[in-house]
Length: 226
Image 1 (cartoon, rainbow, N blue to C red):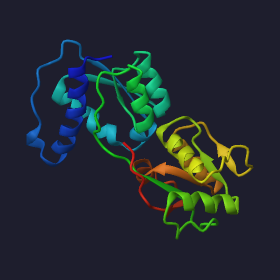
Image 2 (tube, helix red, strand yellow):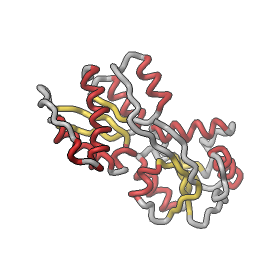
Image 3 (cartoon, rainbow, N blue to C red):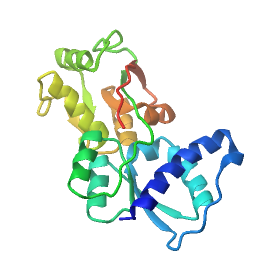
Image 4 (cartoon, one colour):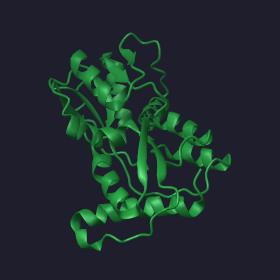
């Protein structure tokens, strides 16, 4: 893993890059690193959102680092970091991150942005989620109607959040005929949900550029997650 200073520098530079989009002349000029190769373990949601397509080139230009991105679920990204196979992680599962740090796997943890989540589904909304006002109500309506729901089932941050919501309503959906476990990234799951006219939980950043042709947002209450 990179030393503490480098890890902090990457997080700060990513934020600086965001600011530089609005104020290009504000980008700092940094000394060239002795070892320019940097492996970034990140989530498929971050990759699928298109954010890295903007930030990584700017970061490389400003810092002199050459970034190799490994895009997997948060759980897999944390495992990469624990094995020393990634220098920096950009993930979104706060509870897992805290446990990972407590186990001595990282030198520093910084919050650099927030993601929020929505449930999307068929345009005709067979479960009647449009009027739901909480995540618990959304899942209760899906349970009551037995409408098809596609889970990432990959231990990603999104999947961990989904399981927390099921737990909050006292229900385990595994084994239900309407509950499909994809074991894939967010972009692929949105496609599956569209093909099967099913509901799924997605981060908004991936959903917006993906478009998910036959689906529409049924519930837009944001759930804050780092």
